[in-house]
Length: 184
Image (tube, rainbow, N blue to C red; front, side, top):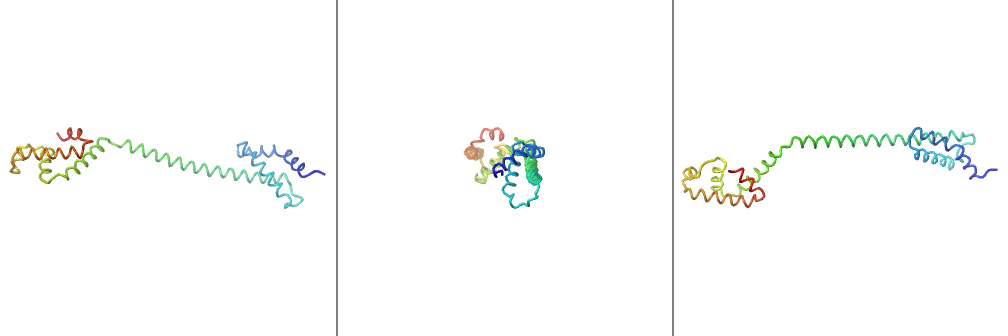
């Protein structure tokens, strides 16, 4: 009479290579096919006493292998769908970054930023100084015309402009050279 170990070994040797080929024809990965086959044979062996005496052992093991292969292939399909969604999302993100960068006009962004910084700094000036500075630099009105319209001296207009430039210089020190070019 054959021992359980010998019986298991004979079953393993007799069917393993055929079952591995079968599993590999579906999962197309030899290591996975070998694992599935070994797991199916061990599963049969651990549950053999619960089976009826007329159970077709190779068919039982092959059914287990079939089910394990189906599970593996369904797992691969789910993983590939997720990867495809991730790829689609990554592609969309890349397309948006490319479109955004292509539409970017650095001069507009920089000019807008400087414009906002200048406006914020100008709001810190006294009202009269701000009014004189804006007339001089933005409306391009001469100091003489500003002095006449406000009924003040030219020296007073120059003092207000100098004060405004000093405040702007300290508030906008990082941008001062560019501002000098823009505000002339």
